[in-house]
Length: 324
Ligand SMILES: NC(=O)c1ccc[n+]([C@@H]2O[C@H](COP(=O)([O-])OP(=O)(O)OC[C@H]3O[C@@H](n4cnc5c(N)ncnc54)[C@H](O)[C@@H]3O)[C@@H](O)[C@H]2O)c1
Ligand SMILES: O=C(O)[C@H](O)CO
Image (cartoon, rainbow, N blue to C red):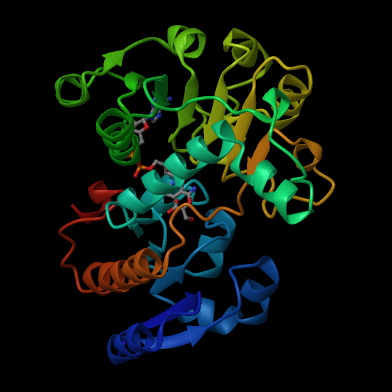
């Protein structure tokens, strides 16, 4: 008999077919508490989960006593209680690598859009506001040869450093849990503590995961350390930045601008103070959202679940210790 799984994300037809070949699939519209209750029988039988978004914690695990593996269509897994999964021996699989270059492209797009005022100026043209030569009040700020500070020098941080250093001649500083000598030599980069990075950088770019240690890592105090001309880019997770403190810093001119793909609450409410600020470029969490990359993530997530439920995990496992 095929193992039963819960699918909580719509997949392209060919991938759905591949999943059906291996599993008995119950598809639900999101991993919400309401759906866990509505499909209680399916959760009782489920050995696997595949999807994105929604909380997987002790409560959900209690509703799924046969669960052996969870496969998220994302690299970030802050919505999973990994400790609870470990205690139950549930394998957690994710999709690193396949999305790295696309997310680094998005971060570079945010750097360029916020420094060169791309969105604001394009809106001005569309609104018929281009009635004469653009004057200094609408001039932008350069990107090339400036200093980029990268917070979180992992896969995405390195791909961003590659673009900034080789493409834009930028100086690279970074803060991570430890120095990375290969990064220093490849991108002529310099490891610093957080405060030095904030004080020196023209662009502070966040590609950190959300953890207890990174929650509100950037708050009021850190924002005041940044240059008044500096731009904050966040494509890690929203709660790494204290959003009310960021709004205040942008309003008070303590920093120049922000380019954001992630927010404390998503979707970003229309009432958010960020949306009233011309010096904010806000994207709807689309770091990896190209056709090619989203397909690759879904494909990897399917392969990951097949590997995990057949005991053949070789890569993409968050908690390999439970395999032993
Ligand atoms: N906006 C998007 O659509 C999007 C897409 C993909 C990933 N992300 C986010 O980007 C994150 C990073 O992805 P990745 O593939 O580069 O992961 P990664 O694990 O390769 O890199 C994360 C880096 O952050 C460092 N780090 C962790 N905690 C730290 C701390 N307290 N202080 C300093 N450094 C710390 C780690 O050492 C690691 O080098 C993901 O966890 C996810 O939250 C967002
Ligand atoms: O972590 C990730 O992969 C992205 O944020 C998409 O959810």
